[in-house]
Amino acid sequence: MPLFFQTGYVLMANNDVSVHGIWASRWIFILAATGSAVGLGNIWKFPYMVGVYGGGAFVLVYLLCIVLIGLPIMLAETLLGRRGRQSPVNTLKSLAAQSGGSSKWSWAAMVGMVGALFILSFYSVVAGWAFEYIVAMGNAEFGGISAGAAEQRFAALTGDPLRLTLWHTVFMIFTAWTIARGVNAGLERSLRVMMPLLFLLLLVLLGFSMTSGHFKEGLVFLFHFDLSKVPDGILAAMGHAFFTLSVGVGSIMAFGSYMPKKTSIGKAVLTVGLIDALVALTAGMALFPIVFAAGLEPSAGPGLMFITLPYAFGQVGMGQLFGFIFFLLVGVAAWSSSISMLEPAVAYLVERTKRSRALVTTIIAIGCWVVGLGTVMSFNILADARFFVADEAGWHFFAWTETGGKTFFDSIDYLTSRIMLPLGGLCFVLFAGWVLDRDVVRAELAMEKSRLFPVVYTLVRYVAPVGVMIIFLTELFK
Image (cartoon, rainbow, N blue to C red; front, side, top):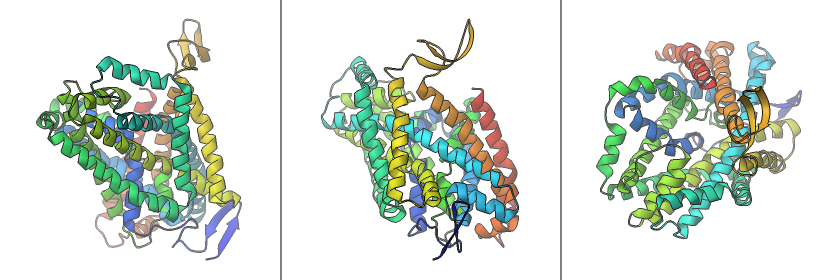
């Protein structure tokens, strides 16, 4: 198929096939998008939010937020990707030209792409912790461990920059190797193995939890129906509905560009949303009974994953085996998410430089690895190096202090999750709703005769943007 090169980016002769390749079927897109969406937050954050904010009542609110905010943005990213058949940056540039819009829209994808690389830089470090615990559980290091010893074990890991760097390097190599092999030989083949393995490991853990003697207690924590707590959790539900689907950075747009032309975007996106929610709820049903079996209180965050659960696995029969399975699950989930963060930048630079995918991937991965060293040292050597410090003397961009301000890791996390991702998601959905021609959107969604199209278009054009603005302002001033 002939290619035409203009102003440093690639334009396809038609929009049937991306220059980078095409998924073998719609299920590969679903696996890719689900792999991007299912990450560490599904395992340690969402189940806890459900238990704290009203159980089943919160689940209903969350699903409503998914329908009103998360899925419309994912729908917008996917249809833009398939229509443009290029990297997110060049997709917005070419579609803006076709629609009579400004080429500056491409900067939204550029910001999302850079944001994804920043996220990958620290995500790789945190995922490296899971790799460390896979080995530790395999060596039965947590059998009968005390709660204090489990906490000290995690503190010793985060306090060791060489060990963190080792696992950060290993994880980045895994991610880069997958991307460098290409859409079909790398992404597709890996996803065919990773995602079924993730689902299998999760079901095995669920089966183990059913034998813990505290499965009912875990279900009550997750699914009690308390409407009085829902108001406090509405903003949390809106935020998680946005962040859990991995929208706003261009990953879904990149994956959409590899989607077969005949695939129904609406059905595929809806399937991804349902699977993502089911995985998060199943993770809660699998993990919290183990926490209760060890006589512990549920918690959220890294403390649950790397302190509470290792201690809990060490107190129950066959816990070391299932702890190994759990951290293997965490590692697979992190790996499937990380490849989606790297793909948009690789696709863009391959198009722009005409260099091989392997070379481009290596260069970008090394850059992410270097930035990730800042996160590594945020927990030890540079723990007192703080940004945005406010004290009695005034405000300082940088200062050495034990309290106040943000570490390098905290700063990167704040910049990406509270600014870059919401702005990216807002721009993508505004572009699909207000710049792209209405008939193009209708045709790409294959809804020429559907009575549902006005509803979907209203969600994309009005409801989702307002929701993202609320999320953005909430996160910014939290």
